[in-house]
Length: 253
Ligand SMILES: Nc1nc2c(c(=O)[nH]1)N[C@H]1C(S)=C(S)[C@@H](COP(=O)(O)O)O[C@H]1N2
Ligand SMILES: [Mo]
Image 1: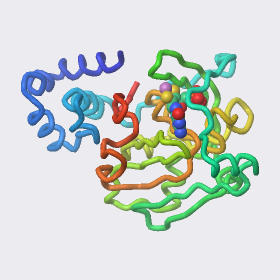
Image 2: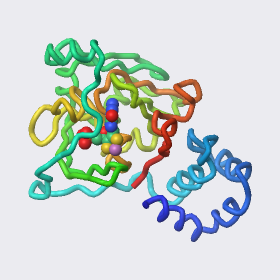
Image 3: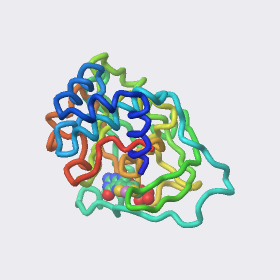
């Protein structure tokens, strides 16, 4: 539904009139020309995806923040969508309380690195109470604590050729963010929720929390993060698992 709103804003800005009446080539030229083309622009909903993402990036400030709530607004029930991965590797790490788990950070970085949970917990932490909305129609408010992704990106040293950060979990639900959302101060690598370590179903030991987008962008059960210049060579080349199953790569709210 938020997509309708963003498309309306786009129309109001007068860009949509041109691109909407024309076909894919116009939308993709517009996007390519301004660097506003989402990775799933060539999918079956490519024109719409390009308009939505392009409008969002043209009209909304990258610095705008998702709303943060007060402790008494935390939901009593936090549903889980996508339980713990079934792989043996994940089961072994979980049985060992993730002592042997490390987050690998590689790609277009000066210092490819890996971090244990204890190391991540020693970095400057950010605590935020935000709303997580699932595309399936439910949502909840919770407090998350973690290290801002921007801090980790700063440590490893991001190349000027970087355009996206891709997140790889222990299941198939990989995803990616553009550098604007990756550097955003509210984008966290979260290891705690509501005052405890991240519960198993909510993404232990580490998940992304990106409150400016729908829940599926907040990848759980992280294993590796890769800074890339293109997403074309990953999976079906659409930027994440979601467009492969009919959802948008960009899910701004
Ligand atoms: N690795 C992984 N991450 C995932 C999922 C998943 O199945 N696997 N589900 C996504 C979806 S659709 C939503 S709405 C949120 C749900 O987060 P929660 O289980 O903490 O409520 O996680 C997202 N991240
Ligand atoms: Mo979801």
